Each structure stands twice: as structure tokens, then as C-alpha cells.
Length: 357
Image (cartoon, helix red, strand yellow):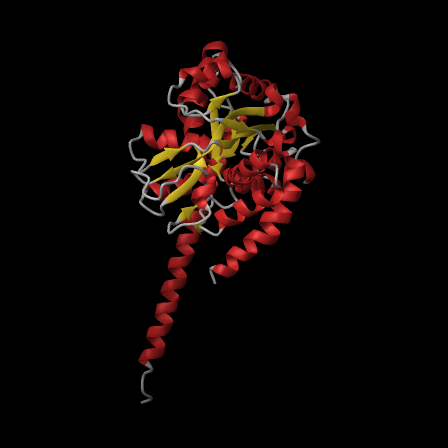
């Protein structure tokens, strides 16, 4: 009698079991995806309508917890219709990539107008349509600030103090985060607008990036790392600082630079994804975003309103001696070409990568 090949039989049984398990798992996952898609499509096509909204990371809490529920209740009281929302919040660059790939968002709220310009260049929207919205599409603002550990052990008082020292600097990544782009503009612009010297501004920006040790993909992720005791210094939005302070999990204190930029966040109406039956609902929601009620909600969540009169409602907003805006630097087209491409991307970032090899 020929000997039995036990190893061969066992191996065959093992692979058969793995195949069967994988097949069952794929079928199970496929059924879940099918059920979710069916529920979503039936919701959009039946009595319960939804608006699809994509936005930059730190906006999610204010939108999901207060802005959208408030509008939902007002719409129900006015029309008797119970509507829903499908939302996604991540780094502004990541959101922009998803929109370019074709996600069916009807409204997008981006950290920078630069991302809106990308959507225009890629044919996602036709022209600078956001300019037709209230305040040229700017929804709210937040200055860029510096967070340090309790007691400010490295004696940081301004951006110029970040160019040297034995500390780890956390900075969100400009490839994926709109907040990171605003931070670069603050780091460069604070020196350029103060001195009028281009090379001094480049030197300050270069020195700061030589201190960068951690590059999270978004402002939200950067803040989470700082709150979990990672790094020594963080450059971020004032809004992120105020949120952490309100939740009592900040893990540090704020430094307001003498001169810093006010970020301006841009709303986009994605016309090609809005059918005739959705237009009134989408437009009413857009109108609501700039209403006094909605702007007051943003202020309560740490964003500065485009209606300056409302900003006195939040006494936690800090004072900045010499604030500036993107227009003071020449607008997005100019800074994209000069500061981001010619200075940061082509010179500073390669030096930083080589230093960390």
C-alpha cells in the first residue's frame, strides 16, 4: 500500500478552508455595501431627501452638532418635510481630491480658495462660482496661532522664535491640509509684511521648517497628537485651540503672534450634482449658512464670523496686533506660484526630507 501524504492532504484542507472563509467574508461585505447603497438611494428618491456635504476637518463638529440640525428643524417646521444629511470631513486637500474623483457632493466647504481653484481647473465647477455667494463664498475665519506646553518652557512668543531650539514642532502637511497652507502663509507673511524683505521672510519660513518633526495629514489629526502629549509646539487655527480649551483636554497654552494671517474658508455649490428637485433645498441651506443665527453658532464653536459685530459674543477670541489676509500677500494665484511652489515645495521641503533621511 502506498504511503498516505498527510502533509499534502492537510495543506489542501487548509487552503480549501481559507478559500471558503474568504468567499463567505466577501459575500457578507458585499451584502452590507449593497444594503447601504440601496438604503441611501431609496432615501434620496423617496420621501426622505438628503444633502451631501463635504468639508475640511475642523468644521465637522459645528456642522454636524448644531448647524445642520438647526436647519433641519427649521425646514421641517416650514415644509413638514424631514430631511437628512450625508457628510464627510477631512483635510481640505483630501476633500478636494475626492471631489475631483467625482464624489457626488452638492456643497463643499474648503479651507482655502486655492482648493476651489483646483476644482475649477479640473472642470468640477464652471468658473469661480463661489464668488456669487454671500461674502464671495467666505463662510468664516480663524487666525493661525501657536500652541506650547504649559508654562511655555521654550519661551516662544512669536513665529521668529520657532526657527531654532531643542523642541519638536508639529505641523500639518500642506499636501493634504488647507490649515497647513494657512500656517505657511502666516510664517512667511508675518516676516515679509513686517520687514518688506523677501529673503528675511524666506529665511524665517526655512528656519521654522527645519524644526518640523511631525507632519500629520490634517489640522484635526495634528491637534489630537498634541493633546496626546506628542511634540512640544503646534501651529494651528485659533478655533482648534478654543475647542481643546473648552473640552479641557488642550495639554498646553496659546501664544498669539504679533502678526498672523486670518484664514478664510470657502463654500462651493457643485451645480452638476444638484438636480432640479434639490435646488431649492440646497440654496436655502446655503442662505442659512450666512444667516445671523448660523454665524452665531460658528462663533460659539470658535470660528470668527464674517459679520464682525457677532465676534464680540465670544470673549475667548484673542487679540492680534497686526492681522493680515491673503489679499495682503497678493491673492491665492500669486502665493501658490511663489511661496508654495518656488519656495516651499521646490526648496524648503526637499531640504527637510534630506535632513530626515
